[in-house]
Image (cartoon, rainbow, N blue to C red):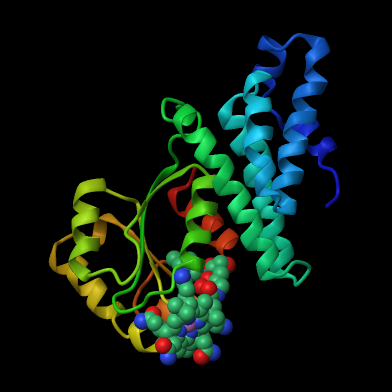
Length: 241
Ligand code: B12
């Protein structure tokens, strides 16, 4: 994985660096972010707690770790996966690295208005379907882009989506589906949301290996993406932030 030192150089929050960090320490911060970026891209999840602690102790803001190291690393991994330069196990390891880092950072991010939140996503695997690896990747990427994600899990009942919309007022409701048979439940999921009078308040998203743009269009679903990093990019586009 090539070094991103140069891009970090120009991207890390200027206020943080110029206002708060003495000149002599600026290089350290770039180096710490670069290490986190590279470890994430390489899927070195065991290194993450140490690297994140080092960065936080070194004065790097949690949102900079997410925005300048974790998220761009996951986008690079997603892009490389998309063009066949990385394989699924690589992507899963990077996702695990990101999740490990996020677990360390979440307590610090709770009060951090710079990252919380682009919006809220409610996501679940459709009724009757137990697959969740792809859904979990989408969650990692969406969280990495600053979304609060409510994960309803697998085999999610129609009513659970409706309740989650009422409770969380999400901008996006996302369905993951891997089985052709249970993707046939999508119209029922949508009908339950319509019957509750909530359809106009949300953008729907759908994805999963057998899902296509045509499938999404057939049911008037606003967002479709074929992989997790494109999904997160589409979410960002829809909330317009
Ligand atoms: C792992 C796996 C399992 C595991 C699931 C473990 C888990 N925790 O998820 C287990 C063993 C439990 C399993 C069970 C079954 N499976 Co299975 N399984 C798979 C397998 C091998 C990999 C799926 C996977 O995780 N892929 C990796 C992830 C990362 O990819 P993904 O899910 O597509 O997600 C990506 C994108 O689609 C997208 N995405 C995903 N969700 C969303 C959501 C949104 C909103 C967006 C925008 C994008 C998005 O982003 C993700 C990341 O890039 C596939 C083979 C395949 N080629 O897909 C079969 C497969 C999906 N399984 C299949 C079948 C038939 C079954 C079983 C019925 C088998 C059986 N006879 O018992 C059961 C079903 C049980 C049930 N009720 O769900 C078939 C489905 C065929 C079909 N089209 O209907 C497949 C295709 C295998 C095959 N070729 O026959 N399975």
